[in-house]
Image (tube, rainbow, N blue to C red; front, side, top):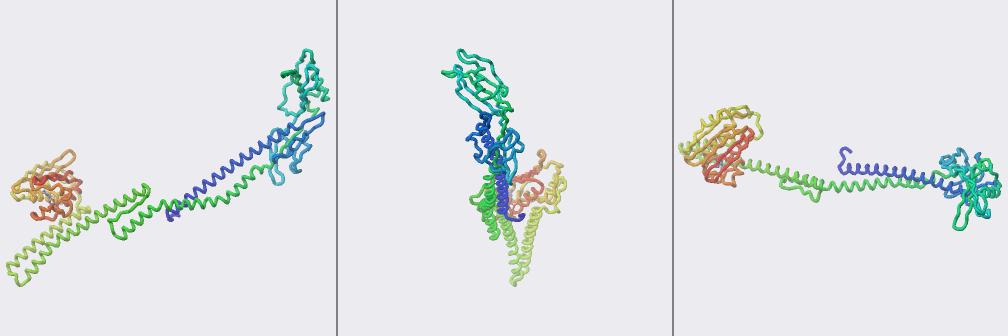
Length: 529
Ligand code: ADP
């Protein structure tokens, strides 16, 4: 994995992530759903049991379970037990006839036949009777018997009331009790009130018998707990098979996405390979329609290629210029040698030839030493160590050895005691190059001004002449190696290396060389250290 391709890595991680997320999401959903289903199942169980309560009552002392009592409904089995937990009635399988731990209003579980079951119990404590009796005639208009749970008991309320021209409330109670065959002592609570609707006033008599008259009964509902989760189990089994399919689809998708994402990188790699195998630095990488980051990567590569190409070409140019400069004196030397050695040459001619050879050799020595200096200063040769130097004194000693030709006057303005880290040999060479240029390109009987001054924490060396000046289009080029303006080529000797050496030396001394020039009027070279 460590060394596998980026595409495979992306595919692997995306797939893993999707697999984890899917597994977590599915497990979460399954857990939540099973909880919801469980609670719904229990609610159903409670609902069915409590609905059945209305369908059970004592009639004339005999327990009567009405035909609407649902012994089995919606997977719920309801069994009726007496106060002691003895089975009274039900239609459930024998294994589900269970009266252990009867507890009013609570859901519990038990296991049987390898299955888990929820049960819900309701205890019907009391028998309740409700009568509506005509206040005038004492006739029973309506009669209802029912069972009630403890929490449904109401307070006893019986205030003697007489109805004008009719019966009293006690009479109404007596009529109702006679009808049921109960005695007042057998009651737990009694409630009498007069209600009147549009045309009739009635006594509403409600009474509840005590436990000894009608013993409490239990209704227990039972449902298979697994029925809630059976659908979920089926779904989860299906998911177990579907999940690997999901993962495979995710892996394929991830691979396609990563391959698409990697295409621009592959394009860039291919272009880079083509460039390196063809050794053609002029070619550029085509990023195509890629993302911003990749376009910028390709652009950076292209910039790097452009700068490599530029330096490569400048090196090539440099080598070709250097060879060219060496070839001319060598050709002269060869021709002079051949002439001197021929029979035609008189002894005087031979002397001339030797002197020409010596002159050309001198020229070559100068060129080679200039090239050597360039190379050493460029590569930071160790022999050039900067030491704290009094450059004012150094410059004065250079000037002592320097005699301007062409009737040129040299004006100097050197501030004393300016010290800075310098390499005296190179520093002198830089000053000599600029001074000799000022003479070479200065006008006959002109003036050169040299000044060395402190300006704040900077040191400024300026060499100004009133000579031929430099054309504006050449200003940029004069520091290039072997560059010579056209007018310099024929009129003055030189290789076009003096300024590039001066520039390199200035940079070695943390200086910056600039030129200000007006063509035909003169130039000022300034180095700010
Ligand atoms: P070289 O003097 O050997 O030609 P340099 O590198 O010293 O080489 O100078 C490069 C070119 O810059 C010169 O050929 C010349 O055209 C121009 N140049 C340099 N110094 C001056 C100057 N003081 N005034 C006018 N042109 C100059």
